[in-house]
Length: 288
Image (cartoon, rainbow, N blue to C red):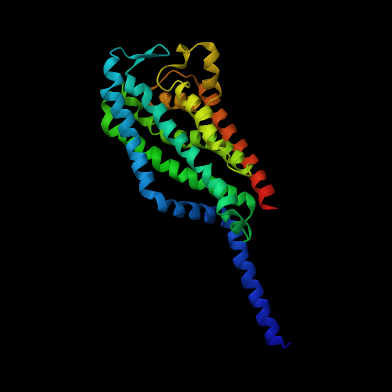
């Protein structure tokens, strides 16, 4: 082998190593890009769902249930118009509903049906980066949903705002909504990554986890009006914790700094703890 040939091979190796290090640095975002691009196949479903849900729920409540409720809701000693009371909780529910979609069947598809996670793993991408990219891609869709939901609330129900000064904090409902979706969805992704086959587990999650959480987490009425033996559903539910923060942001519910921090900490622990577990499960599953 001549010196020129050896030098040329060294340059090729160096170039290959450089190309290999690049996805190692930005691998999470490559997976995120793939997940977001894959959503284009059902992009209209995402947009229509993100717009249709607030229209159906909020307008339905405006011309239906709230028309029968003349008195405001007594939320911690503060009278609040009914639509203002339910709006933050419905925004949080919308984000969690997206999480229940993106962190279940797409994860199963990546491991079993389409197996594209194994394709990612055959490249310089690492298993934790794959898990992180799935989370970031779902968070992007949740972000679109909460932004459209919040815009609808502001455009059509802004006049119901009991305290105009809260406009400075009302926008916090959007990042809290994404955090709520992650607090529910990332542990669900870890559960999905542990499954070898779909035998109806995700349907059971919808019926026996998501729906009770939606109905009994203070979404449509204060949690305190429920009997104590049902209130625990709200206490362990990320929806109730996120709704309490959203109500503080939207109309200034007296939550208290300590409880506000506790609500946010609970959501963060669920999201971060779920991610740690999901990264380990992805690594174990993709190492086979």
